[in-house]
Image (cartoon, rainbow, N blue to C red; front, side, top):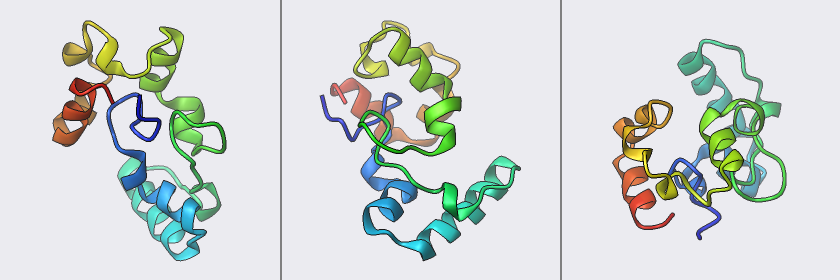
Length: 112
């Protein structure tokens, strides 16, 4: 199991929140907060852009920690990733991730 591949198949090491946290990059935090605010239609402050990875111990963004239905489901089912779920390719919660990130599907198929 690769702990840096999220339950959904996304690579946490490529996420701007993870990169900003790892490098303590406040400029990237501000840029990411602005982009995510526009994308999600909610205000997100740079101080909220901190994450050490979906499946690792440590800080996570508010969304990943408390609101991500994909993460909640995988943890409830005690899965290492959604790729272990028999219905992951037809999962409505996972569909937007897989539709927009072909690498996520490959990561899940390869045991991410």
